[in-house]
Image (cartoon, rainbow over all chains, first blue to last red; front, side, top):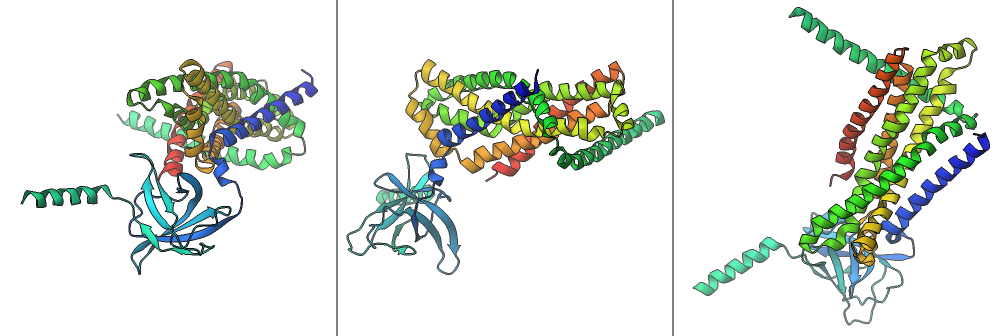
Amino acid sequence: MTSRKIEILVGLFVAGAIAAFFMLALKVSNMSSYSGGESYSLTANFDNIGGLKVRSPVSAGGVTIGRVTDIEYNNETYEAVIRMKIDAQYDRFPVDTAASILTSGLLGEQYVGFEPGAEEEYLKDGDVIDLTQSALVLEQIIGQFLYSQGDSKE
Amino acid sequence: MIDRIAHLGAVTLAAFNRLGRASVFFMVVLLNVPGLFRRPALIIKQLYSVGVQTLVIIIVAGLFVGMVMALQSYYGLVDFGAEDSVGVMVVLSLLRELGPVVTALLFAGRAGSALTAEIGLMKATEQLSGMEMMAVNPMQRVVAPRFLAGVISMPLLATIFSAVGVLGAYLVAVQMLGLDYGPFWSQPQAKVDLYDDLYNGIIKSLVFGVVAAWIAVFEGYDCVPTSEGLGQATTRTVVYSSLAVLFLDFILTALMFSK
């Protein structure tokens, strides 16, 4: 086999592998959520974040508008501190917006849901969200349910 | 009784001896790799025989592995009404595990044994010694190109395997079983992570490539230069490469995918 033919075939091989890589990266992975675009950062404090992870989605009205970027624990106020990056095009959230940790579906993964408030001032980069609702912890709910059962029996 | 202990001691020492020779060999090959870039023709010729000629088995295997995974995942998930998750299951299995590991096993069997046989035959027919007589470095001319071609080809082949597997799964799940194509593509887009899954899979296949290529060229270079010795060396390549790949797969999975 001539060396020219060999070189062409090797070139096709490498090109095919690169094409396969791009097909996997674009069509099948979550690469689109890494795409740049402007964003601004907000912080929220929760008593319990449940199963929230870095890169969990932030949604408003069911639409993903951002991602969780940082999870930390404040040892002085005993609260979990979440930092989120929100797409810059969604810049009209009032300062009394509520952030709650919800679960998608019954056993799905957890996400942060925004409920817009009614103030006229909007949240800016670096602002802290005041109204927060922590994740539901299954054991606490069961405990409350059992207590209320016990009460009603008396 | 004493004989048996002595024999055990001898076998153990021989094993360590071999491992030491293999490690020194590995270092020498690595040192000879930079000089190769002045002669890319050597690498390209080896990329053809190691990479391109393994493509057929990789593509066929990938297609059928993807199809079987889709079918089995469907049978498992349909009882829970979760058959729309077939896409996610197949993609994650392929990218994280099956792609790198099955490709490495097939590579060791097809390309690894060919490399061992080539180099072993060169040693048996004294071509390697002849090269040394002519002041041509056989490590740089013969061994290093084959090693580098193996290392480069493995991630490429593993990616092609995974991509073809996903296509095979699509054919079975959507065309044959009638699942909806929307969730088949959108669920992986949500759950498959570019860095944690795709890149980790590629890193795995690179590591497997280094190990499989190293074992193949070493067994060839170190074989007993008879036809019987050549056969034993080829067998050893396939067996040791496969065991090493599976062992390293466990280690790498534990390192990469632990929470």
